[in-house]
Length: 276
Image (cartoon, rainbow, N blue to C red):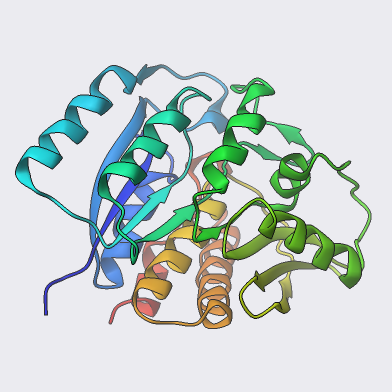
């Protein structure tokens, strides 16, 4: 059997574990070939505050032209952090060129957290991201991103189950078949992940202890495990649980190590959980 391939459309940070440097080892450990499609090259992740980067936009169409010339195909297309709103049209074009009816499309609308957009973005990213979300099989926003996509106020108070279900069903109305909302506030020092399958109207909530450690890249790890698990035949609920288990392992290991949070989570010791 041929190894499955995923086209991973993310930025690349040379230092600090996130985006492609998270997606490539994680999905590879799950037995899937990762074909990176960089959106930008960063010297280091944004948590350092000071960085230099190179926008990869001028090269992206040429790469896709060459892949078409070579007759390449992908079993999944998985997008994450983009350099700006303008790159959404390029990702949409990649879906048009390389997706068939059976291609898994995973969109992680990585643009915000803690109630606000990342400082590198302007509000037009929200309007454009809705267009990309409409093309997705699975969309994986955190709670902030879900609120922005729906145009609803972000509230740090703990939402009840009915509110979370309304958020999920609202996102489904934008077009994706399956919704996973991460980083949902929960009581008792926990954090929640909600999932919703529009085809069956199946809604699930899963909680995990909140570890007092915050850094970049945790959403990338979660979405990468979710993508790999889905490609390997897991149900949505099974994929969510596997992603939660892996991310919790990585965060706890990093927290106990006392390492600099700016380096991202030390997920490498947890990769054995994923190897098939």
